[in-house]
Length: 101
Image 1 (cartoon, rainbow, N blue to C red):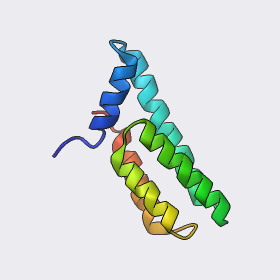
Image 2 (cartoon, one colour):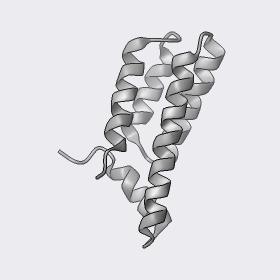
Image 3 (cartoon, rainbow, N blue to C red):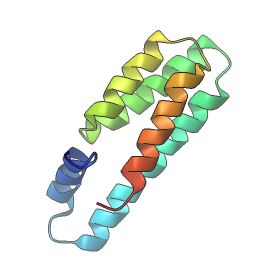
Image 4 (tube, rainbow, N blue to C red):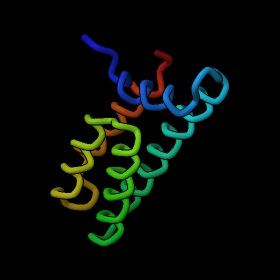
């Protein structure tokens, strides 16, 4: 089974070049941003806030080529605000992506 964050790491490596500190910083920024969007989704109580947070998560995921996160963001766009199943799956995915490769 391929490492879940392989595409993300490849993208970050292309940007960071041979600078391992920059790589780690960019990778951490991605995870932190994804967690921030998940937090906004968890606190959303209306369709508008839910939709905006989902689109931001999808945009972040697309920027870093995180295909599984894009798919989950698409699920969020179709779900009702606060849908616990998709929020839980996003949290698990972000936790897995935050592990060192």
